[in-house]
Length: 226
Image 1 (cartoon, rainbow, N blue to C red):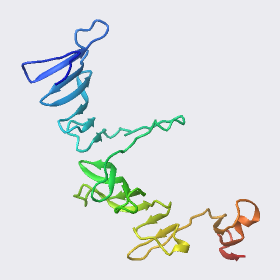
Image 2: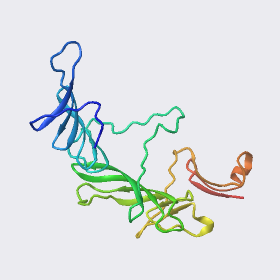
Image 3: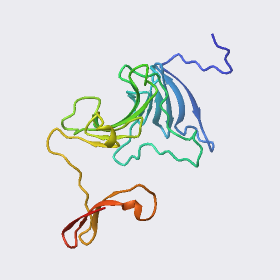
Image 4: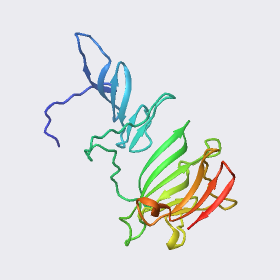
């Protein structure tokens, strides 16, 4: 069905292109097809493969997702550098799944997911184009599932939700913190400095702290300001 520019065939299990330099008889650099798997090798070690399902594995011979990167203990993962060109990015572009998930970045240890970041769209026809980013973590010793437990999400309106998927009351829903037991927010400052909560209606001057709660650690005093 194809018009071949070049065709490589082999009667054994592998067909490969070997790339040499400096007159070497075998640098160990090759592109090969083995049982419907395309593998890329340098210095006689496989570095990347595309399996029969179209999954791409870098540093692994058993990719479990569309793009699966595996490194040893000294690995750095994915480095994305940009000089302002928006095309220089890591993109998830796929049909939305039944749960709204478009793409997931997993952090795994010994095959167990301990952290993940998911990109999610809305779940119905009215908000399916809304964007949500969720962040999950899990103890490797206790998690036997593929997905980590969601701990935080940033919704399509820019609201941050910690420990919950339900935002707070509309007049105070930019940040919602929830816990099924005791919970709270800690503000930690130096022993000779102040811990502050400021109420502002401006971006400069004293109006940036028109009202405030301020704990002065040097004198162990709590001030209320208006």
